[in-house]
Amino acid sequence: MGALAESYKDTLLEPQHIPLDYGSVHTLPDSHVWLDESDESPSGVHSTGPPVIDLADPDAARLIIQACETWGVFQLIGHGIPTKLMEDVQSEAEKLFDLPVDQKMKALRSPGGSQSGYGLPPISPFFEKLMWHEGYHIMGSPVEHAKLLWPNDYQGFCDTMVHYRSQLKALTEQLIRIIFKSLNINPEEVAWLKDTEGLSIGLQLNCYPPCPDPTRAMGIAPHTDTSLITILQQSKVSGLQVFKEGAGWVLVQPVPGAITVNLGDIFHILSNGVFTTVRHRVVATPIRRLSFAYFYAPPGDFIVSPVLSKDFGEVPRYQTLSVKEYVGIKGKHFEKALSVIQN
Image (cartoon, rainbow, N blue to C red; front, side):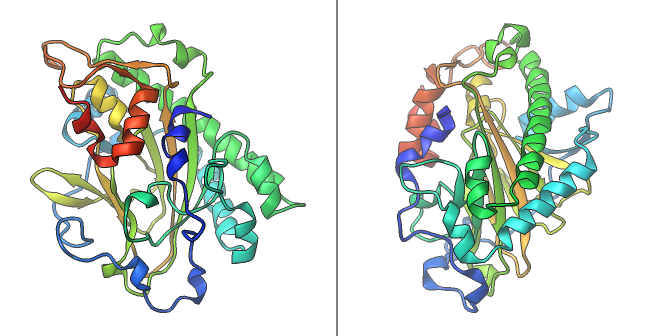
């Protein structure tokens, strides 16, 4: 099990915290009502969205670094992921979430068990209220849990997801090499970029069902990702918002064919706080929307040490620690994890 998988192993779904049968719910249950008390509420969105960058642009590397510093998130076109593959993933995910509730429950994640399978977001235990969401997480081979859903017809789903992960992995590592160069880290000297043993890689299929009262519900609660990089494929219906200082919550309006790239805590630490780890959330909507998130993190024994230079500061803002150590801190302190390791 990879480092990120371990992070929430002890905070997985309690038996009673399983997705609703959303098709039979016509009013918002109290358990899913998020009070409008602060900027955490699903209202008050401002400003224009994060930049859209064409990876084929000769100036792409500079634009990516600029986006890392100012936003921590950007949309990417010209990324090379085949349109047909993105459509196939959408189709397979729709097939999964269209299954009857009893069938989906056969692949339910169990507390302390496998990270793969059906259920609520792993961050759920950190919040008093529940999120308007159902998800399906894939770590390692997708076959075991897919067989529970489609005993005689699982191969198409598995083949699509394996191909998709392979494409996303290659793209992610291309982006990591670009960003590492700006940190004066030689990608050729980073063993896990050549030998993928120990990497923590997960693919999360998200479904946000039609919500009867979307202004009082939350699809995914505000958080930052622990990962190095997260890549997200959005549907045509917008719902992702990112928090930008001075602007508040900003809508990431989906661009046709684009994917969204956001930096996680590990890159924030490596850059000595210069690169933003983007706080984000997903609001509920009156119509169903899907998204697919690919999480990439180094092996647990990789040492995360702030880069010190004229550009990134000569005094470390954060402690040096392993990925596994930080993941443990995040699993305990959640949104306060970065402040816990500040110098």
